[in-house]
Length: 191
View 1 (cartoon, rainbow, N blue to C red):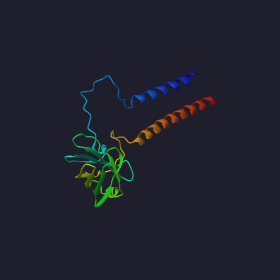
View 2: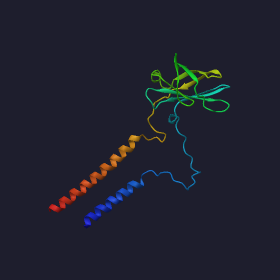
View 3: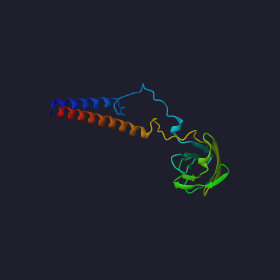
View 4: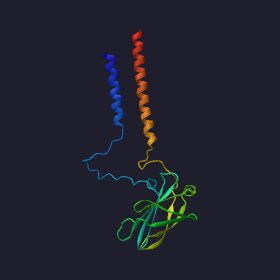
């Protein structure tokens, strides 16, 4: 290995070390950071939800914004025991329409509707849920606030494509350095 190659290697190593020092540090165990107070997650990090309860049932309705068409997911539990209510008949009335919900997993019922996408951002959606089981029936009312914006941003505040852009920028810098070093070596070799 020539002296020139050693210099290029050393400079590349120092550049890579410097870039890695500016990268964010991952979480690790063994240290107590109790004095640090983390900022609460923004409200946009959570899916919009509505809650209702009666003597028999507890209902949580969540707007599934990660799916097209938008859908409402209703989780229905027994109020006293918190066990999921399976095999119930749910009808959800919203925006002047009544739709039957399908059970997608034990105690979780879904309603898909193109009406949900047409609602203005930040609006309030009044929900009336009719529940019928073999033992009892009930009528629950609640309201769901539509999100002000639909965000594809994660809870940490960085989009996934920003990582790709940074990786591409670092690769471009390394490619440019390699090109310049090779060009310089060729220029010295022709003299």
